[in-house]
Image 1 (cartoon, one colour):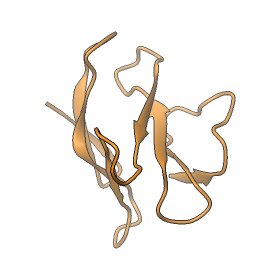
Image 2 (cartoon, rainbow, N blue to C red):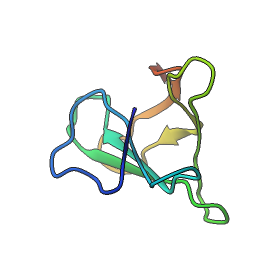
Image 3 (tube, rainbow, N blue to C red):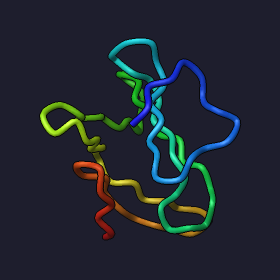
Length: 88
């Protein structure tokens, strides 16, 4: 997980970018783990729907909830738990 103020022009594979200066962060972004190459951006702003939450305390490996369910493109459905992808 890398905390950034702005998203990079090119994403590194297997890297979760979290946007914001300090918690609460407002966006999580990463390359889809299925291999399709698409960038996934998940809002984390309180009051916005849908909204994802990030937990990186304890293990320091990120977990996001709820699951990521792509309704377009590759249509992947997965969880990110403790830095690992769990396919649905």
